[in-house]
Image (cartoon, rainbow, N blue to C red; front, side):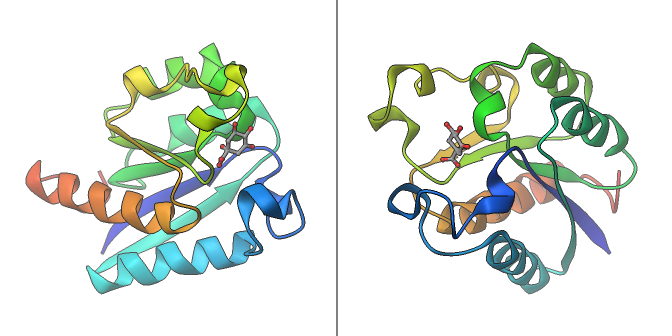
Length: 152
Ligand code: DQA
């Protein structure tokens, strides 16, 4: 079965409790279920990972090849700062979709710039947690179009 890797960065383990006016009331478990359900509809499975640590996110991106056909990534605050994550995305042959729950463009100036967007296959912003479903659908379409095989 083809597999997607869902990676969530720092503070996203606090979804549901964290600034619900910006991120809503749903939890990370709800996000995982949404992506799994979306993937299952198309015959894909999902591996999930969350970390508050930059290097752990780099490790997961490095180890994804051979395990997954593509990556859905919410890098959270590291979006705006991380050259290390950008380099890991550049190095992988897998398509990576960057997703943000909130509309980063109508928030503080420092959130307007993504270090990662130029090396990602696409970006989804501002649709709440539904954005994860949109990211999964777009990623699977791309994987099929590019004829990427099972877990490579
Ligand atoms: C976020 C946006 C980031 O700016 C912020 O640091 C987050 C969450 C989002 O999903 O909207 O932690 O990635």
